[in-house]
Image 1 (cartoon, rainbow, N blue to C red):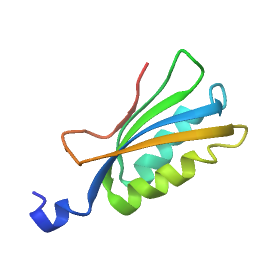
Image 2 (image 1 turned 90 degrees about the vertical axis):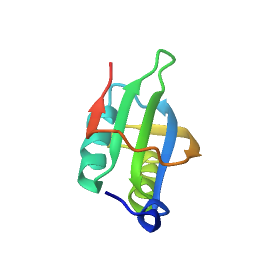
Image 3 (image 1 turned 135 degrees about the horizontal axis):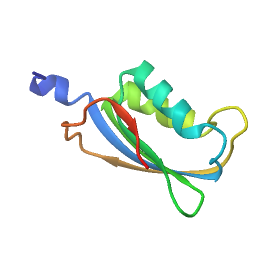
Image 4 (image 1 turned 135 degrees about the vertical axis):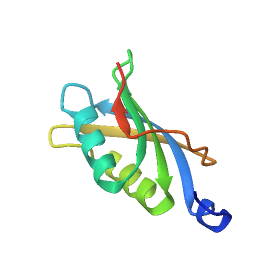
Length: 99
């Protein structure tokens, strides 16, 4: 159980990454990085060619994965990252690729 003080250090970020981000292992690498950081959530491709992700966890870990999204994996050409910071909600289990 996370106490109130620990909850203050938790956050959630909804992210949309635009550019050449599909077909370059963006989703798989995002899952790998998020898992290494202990961040929970999901990632998926969108029909318009962008990638959408939801990250939740300790603020410093979520901030680190969001910073990584600005670069992405080798082969990606990130043009824009839109981030909506949200209140931590909890309830996510692990990190998954959604289809």
